[in-house]
Amino acid sequence: MGEPSIMKKLTNPCDFVGRFFFSFKNDELQWQGRIISKVSEGVFLVQLHQWTNGESSSQVLFSVADMMGWKFYDTAEDWRSELTEYESNKAAVARSLLRSTD
Picture 1 (cartoon, rainbow, N blue to C red):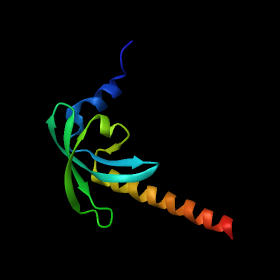
Picture 2: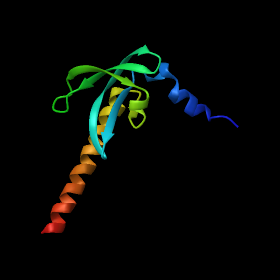
Picture 3: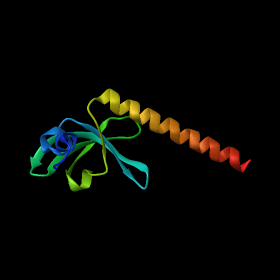
Picture 4: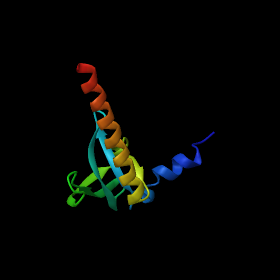
């Protein structure tokens, strides 16, 4: 029956370039940045951004396999909005945990 067309679109290497992303480790945000170019088949150059101020930091190479659990965003606005929501949810959970220990 073949793959759904949406899956083909998202796994096309050209579609990754220019996208913003968040990566996670143990359900915590690990990296944030933007894919800036395709270096070779399945390898991309990524511009990482600092958590404190969002400024560009280092550039790193990642394979598609490394990026499998990442969340991708088409625009910086969507990317920032998701970060705001993530931080808000994380703060709400922390407040709830503090109340449960009182």
